[in-house]
Length: 195
Image 1 (tube, rainbow, N blue to C red):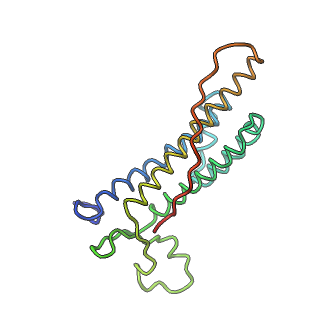
Image 2 (cartoon, rainbow, N blue to C red):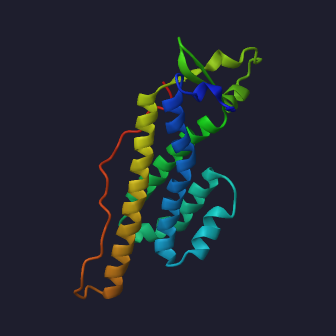
Image 3 (cartoon, rainbow, N blue to C red):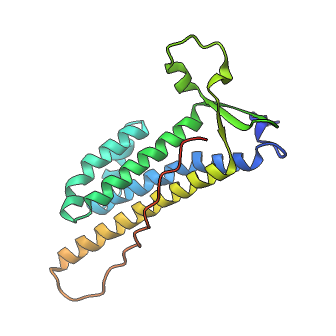
């Protein structure tokens, strides 16, 4: 028995798999953000406590910005950091719309959702639950998942680029093997939140 019958085979099964990956995978993006603070601090304890002590993904992004901005400015990486944090916030918005919604599937409409937080903010009396439905399909969900991967790769790059800058500064220009820097991914356009 499924709590979400619209995701069974023959209906929105494929969409459900991608949605599950987006919902559960968002935490990996926050870990990527945290890895940047770990690179700055040189330890795990303080960065993890700094970012994850307070609940709320939006507040974690703001805390990370405050904790990282100065060091990443010194390393010449602040523009990329700010873009990655902004893109992470977009991923948070996508994840949140799926976390706080009601799903349904019909042969005519396909998979649709109603964002209950969005619905609760409307000033008019709520008389129909499906009045503000948003259709969603595999193509859009795939684009959103690819964007999540892109953001993860941005943090991989930022973490390694900061470490390389720091190691180079610590060596004072002395010769030695160049530290590995994860390649900076090509910029991606944000996918829409829904169709």
